[in-house]
Length: 344
Ligand code: NAD
Ligand code: 89Y
Image (cartoon, rainbow, N blue to C red; front, side):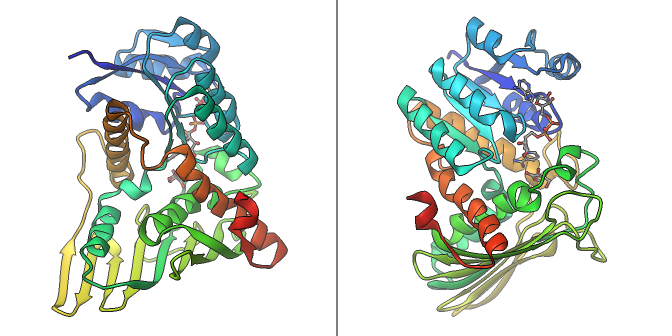
């Protein structure tokens, strides 16, 4: 069977995980890579045996010969690169955060729709094994109808050495990490229409906020709290684990440290470990994220082959990105923000 051919744009810190993920999918072959920094495409090209290397995305698209493009650059280039893919009618995956603004993100969805191409945002945290396990418990109905939830990510891990740009942006934790937590909240509790947020900057050496507490009103009546911090100095560093608490009409669920899941329902209490696999190319503590990269990319290939929209399509991710925008707006104004006003 002919392989699906892919191309990668952006050969930086995180793209290496994506290349490993592609290498593990038998019917995918990455045939071209691009980075404006030739040293970056040399390193990735040599590591993964990709001969076609480009410094310009325009030149790579002009040569063509691939069925999809995987955009792993930072946010400032996302809109131009998705529009470039659309102009060549090439299906595209784009890393989070979707875009610098909601207006850009909407334009990207419109460009993809206009070109008739699928667009998936690489929103991988909902693909983490522990989060999938939480969703499975909800779907089984063990705790009944959820009415309250908390998605919590609190850490003091140094993310700045690997991703120095994170220290420089005016926006930090909500746009970079909270975006994943907000997407998890949507995945578990459904879309939300109201947001109230408070932010703080504790680390004096960075430009943006490193703490955020967000209160969400979901369309189905569930209330959730999404709290994120990179300023929390804990006795044991949990990075990059997300903790989840859910109270339902007939029970409760707690996803705690070291992937311990406790479910309490009418039949009693069960405890299980829902730890991610340590893939051969992965390294602790990143393996939870790394496994989710492999899983979301497998999902992309399956949906591409079936000509079906991926779960975290551009259209879907507008809802997550609107929560990010709403959180910044709410924190700035000191008031609750309606998503309806943002999404129209
Ligand atoms: P990085 O700066 O290490 O790498 C980005 C690369 O893209 C650089 O090598 C840069 O030269 C290249 N680049 C930028 N614009 C380009 C353009 N127009 N054409 C060609 N090359 C271009 O960044 P990173 O840390 O790898 O992050 C990349 C993206 O991945 C970010 O959006 C980040 O938020 C995201 N990320 C996602 C996860 C996740 O779990 N989903 C984790 C970490 C980072
Ligand atoms: O960039 C971030 C992400 O998406 O996951 C973790 C991270 O690398 C640092 O916050």
